[in-house]
Image (cartoon, rainbow, N blue to C red):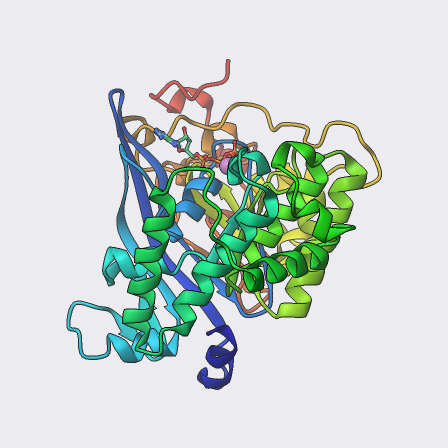
Length: 405
Ligand SMILES: Nc1ncnc2c1ncn2[C@@H]1O[C@H](COP(=O)(O)OP(=O)(O)OP(=O)(O)O)[C@@H](O)[C@H]1O
Ligand code: NI
């Protein structure tokens, strides 16, 4: 599917994904938590997009919202997720309920089952903890072969994308519901699994395929998880802190591997990390998140060479030496807010930690065009005016406990 998509795509249209004004809330006993607060970004073909920010800034929830994996008490309440897929666009072309824009389909408007069916062949994910992606009682090879099999059955169905994806969804659903210990993968799928294990750099892949997850080291299991994620030949791989738990040497190897597979397959990666060193080394473009918003975005050079938002400046002020194993971030003073709707208010969320906060910041800043590159945007009034100490905001202007005395 991904190859066809590449051939058929509109000339000049390089956006695989366009996320617009995405909002995700958790409805908790303490109140409504605005975890994602109107996030917009694009993922291009063949790129690695970084999403960076402190813990609790909304990176993971943003990614889960894109692939429709938010669970109760959470819900995506607003926004659009435009995915480029000509087959899907043609399939739903005459459906008045589905948003279509050229080859792009707004996934928030397609049936749930179709969306679920896209996980695997369109989008796949890897996480910090590879153990969570594997069943401890089934061999690694079998689990990867299963992913291959599901994908193959989906492809062998000659009918339309809709029935194909629905078929996939159904199979996926059935596979998910089966008890552990099954062993029905055929030889061809197992061969493919072994091939995938070898592609991600696992030595003696045929032997390793017969082992169980606990027999793998952390780095090797991370590789196996990547193999599993590649089984469906996805257009987009979402990697959420894929190397955080690994030691520096293994981390470098896994990053190298991600770079390689991205290159070889021409796929796109969204790389979520709190580590600016990783962003600098891996990413083509960057979104900086704070308190559920993208506060600055642009090319790596835009954001790293000319950071405009004081939050980005703060993060970059704390960028570590890549060779230096000491702690990664010197935290900016103060804490990420709790994101309770009742405490957020209509202001710049960073103002109470910002060394350049002004009276203007009591109003919520829009996304400004920085003007130094075609796509450099920032949610800070400093894009339009200089800091003036006469307008400085004293901490007692926040009635919400944001003062840092
Ligand atoms: N199930 C939930 N219920 C309530 N709030 C939640 C839930 N899941 C996430 N949140 C809130 O959403 C916000 C964003 O969380 P998220 O996990 O996206 O942060 P993150 O940037 O990925 O952080 P980290 O670097 O620690 O992974 C946080 O304030 C978090 O408390
Ligand atoms: Ni996270």
